[in-house]
Image (cartoon, rainbow over all chains, first blue to last red; front, top):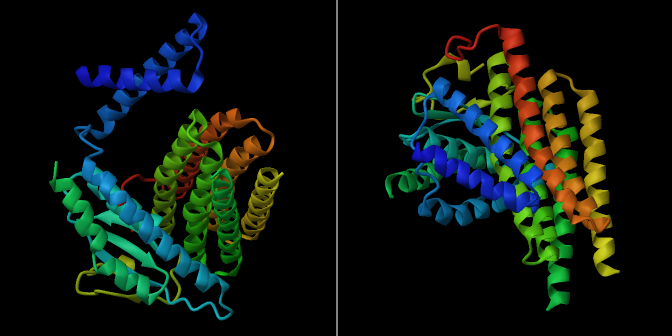
Length: 158
Length: 115
Length: 97
């Protein structure tokens, strides 16, 4: 119940910030939208089960600059590949271990892999992520499991 | 100072556009679906990120920057999620990988990855 | 003047990207190639709205961009759900491979 109230409060604050209107009509619209969102979310929770919402954590924000740096590096690599005349690609498939316990941790891991160009996450199951890599180098980089270690470290620390 | 920020915004917007166009060229040059997906991912991360960063620099510390940041956050959250749904659907449908080497085959006991 | 042309350049870049994405979408060959190109077209539309807002001096258009990101995402998921279940007819991904 308190979780629902927190969500409602957050949603309504964002709604106010976005609209900037305080007329009763617009406030009523806001209340109706917040109520419908909460109803839909509760309905979705019934299907998939809800995880305790203790994300995002401090460690996640410390992880972001490193991720941005990786995205930058791999973007330049892929751009170089596209612009070179002979298109030096050697696609391969790699299975990466994902040692995260929570669904959120797995989502962050898989999304990080997809966000860095040169590697795509195709399938997450049985504690492994199937990754399609554009080159041998990007395959080696993702197989080294640096992302996995960092995301698991965020997951463990509170 | 404002000239400095203008130059930085210029650099971000131009390099963002260049990354977008390179990604689009990659979409045309790459030989199959899986390799094309890498090029498309490039425009969504670097292209969108740099262009929105350039706009943020121009907007300064205002509500506009907060909204731009929200656009960026939503793009970075939804982009890979929609991408993953697309790749998983394509994988399940059996879009061929072409010539690929399967690495750490000791882990990859399943036949579905090799086809 | 300086700040005006920079948005025009970015807009031109985005429009070229969108044009190429459309060509890629028409070219295909598989439905997934088309979806990939259309998804890319959608995210570039978001950028186009944002840059256009600055170009025309109407930053409030960003609200439209924000909504477009979410609509684009839900649209992509909806189409994929249709493609996946329309062709495979089950929702058990363990059994589908």
